Amino acid sequence: MERDGVVNIGRGAVKKADVELAVHAEGLVRKFGENAAVDGVDLIVRRGEIYGFLGPNGAGKTTTIRMLATLLPPSSGTAEIFGHDIARDADEVRSRVSLTGQFASVDEDLTGHENLVLIARLLGHSRKESKARSAELLAAFGLSDAASRQVKKYSGGMRRRLDIAASIVVTPELLFLDEPTTGLDPRSRNQVWDIIRTLASEGTTVLLTTQYLDEADQLADRIAVIDNGKVIAEGTPGELKASVGAGALHVRLADPETRPEAERILSNSLGAPMHLESDPAALSARVSDPERVSRALAELSRSGVAVTDFALGQPSLDEVFLALTGRPADDNENNENPGGKEEEVA
Amino acid sequence: MSAPTTTTQNIAEESLRSALSSSERPKRPNALSASLTFGWRAMLKIKHVPEQLFDVTVFPIMFTLMFTYLFGGALAGSTGEYLQFLLPGILVQTVVFITIYTGFTLNGDIQKGVFDRFRSLPVWRPAVLVGALLADAARYTMASTIILVLGLVLGFRPEGGIVGVLLAVALVLVFAFSLSWIWTALGLVLRTPNSVMGVSMMIMFPLTFASNIFVDPQTMPSWLATAIGFNPITHLVTATRGLMDGTVTLGQMAAVFAACAILIVVFAPVTMYLYRNKK
Ligand SMILES: Nc1ncnc2c1ncn2[C@@H]1O[C@H](COP(=O)(O)OP(=O)(O)O)[C@@H](O)[C@H]1O
Ligand SMILES: [Mg+2]
Image 1 (tube, rainbow over the protein chains, first blue to last red):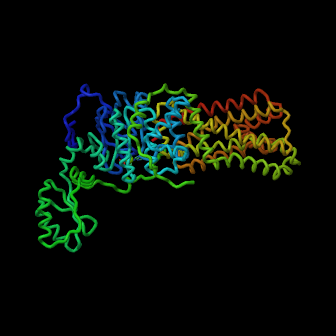
Image 2: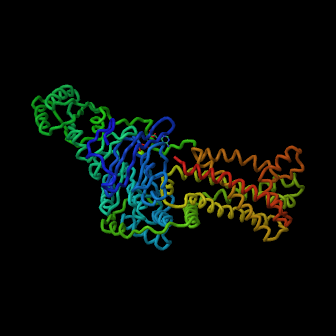
Image 3: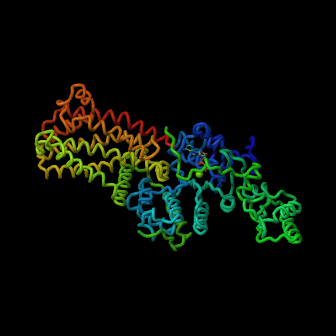
């Protein structure tokens, strides 16, 4: 898996015979006009693991997932899902995977119960079985009370849970979750995390995308970092963090005037350049050795620079990107696409 | 309407585990059953959003009354006589017009994530489209019933009897189903529901007005009458009138079925191609 530009921080290449692979993609490319949304992605996901696909907005996460779920033909490259080619064996692939899209993939006009019955019927359950299955899932996801309410009246967290419930009407072997917690409040996010862990512990392979290193770290066995359609790093969360540094020190000063002085003192004692935040009283730095942090902070107070707040946190996605690419994760507006998929005139 | 609420029920890990383990993959449904399920979905949407029936109830009443009383005296001497001529045509016009909602609805549907889910299921692929068209047939039936009842109240007396009228409605439905494939293709190509509506109107207006719905083409300049002879709507109206009057010929029926066959053979594959390659 050693190829140009990819920081290979994982174990070596996987021989196909060793483990059964849930996803095996090679050189996936998808172009929209001239612009390559996905630009040569190689991906190996082993059966049973939770795989995190980490990247900023517009990196190509959704496009990759849509190709793997047979919704979008690749411009070039190949992928196999449990050994079935996404182009030639699309039906075989579809009968093994489920997709929970970035934007709610349930019907907002219908009730929660009707949505699940609809999916159950489409998968081949009888009317009676479908109703029973729907009731069972609604109960398991804490949605029984909302069963006969239209989905458009659901909260974001409820909608997400229904969406995931719809994906496991028949337990899939591989579940794609596209940004399952974006926009959720912390409590709903934790519920979704619990659901994902339970699914995985019952044997479903999960491929999830996220913009949060924290989330990938919490859930994933392995992570690929994607940027501009390319995988720029791959490995376990530990390996990834090790390559990026222990984390970041964030400091807020009582007086913005003292920032230049604080910058000088901190960068000296941390031995690292300081990053000036857009907040005029805040600055941060990547740190490799937590020992030095306490010394640096002590130095600061000795010089009479008052600090209102400091935190030593896990590296943010921005910091991961800074470390891996030498530039911040670009989140430029023309990548922003909040209204849903852009349709091209075919 | 209640505000969004977060339920206080907790997600019981145990019940989730048992829900996961009790799931078995059933045999995949056949094409018909999948299509009917999608049709059921469309009916549920009508139940939850009944406003969408506006076009199949108000349109037909408006058209029938407007044309009968506005043009009846001028075009045929009396409204009663004109109604006898017009009603089959109005039936065709109304049903054919409301077929364009098919593309409009489909386009709106695609923008939503639920379409991705449908496409990622291992079901017969055209089912989602066929199901929508089946549900549309229910809407057309409703519109047809309204027009016929209104017509009978106003004095329309079909010579072809009840059998003739039912066959006429069935023929119009078959044609509407065939024509809808144009709209599904448009619904997949164009970007927004409104542009689908605009383009469909642009096609539909000349097709319905440059036909024999409102006036007998024999009263028109010959070049226009010839052009109207090529319009499939003209043939449909002729056959529908024939069935309702009890004077239909085999040739008139054959012309309609030929038009239906051409529409399906051309536009169903185009639609399916666009559907498969939808981004
Ligand atoms: N249907 C489309 N037509 C044109 N461009 C697209 C389409 N879908 C995605 N893109 C572009 O491809 C890039 C990657 O998008 P996406 O896969 O949605 O990224 P992510 O999910 O990581 O935010 C973006 O620049 C986006 O604008
Ligand atoms: Mg995305």
